[in-house]
Image (cartoon, rainbow, N blue to C red; front, side, top):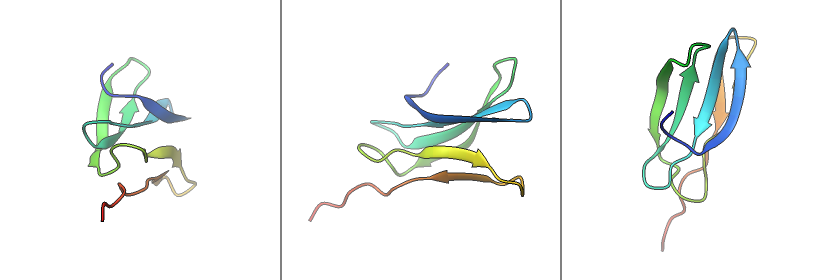
Length: 75
């Protein structure tokens, strides 16, 4: 499986929803089926470095929620 590191995972309706953090590329949210089929749902989130995307959850409204922080600014 490509991507990573995996920051957090949740499962709903037979799918895993995974937050992947990138050091040299943006973070992603991926969905993985029971048979291992991987689908990128959101790519290139601007959180490279110290602040990774975390905590994917599916709400009662069936929306996907996750947390992210912007990369630090350099003055």
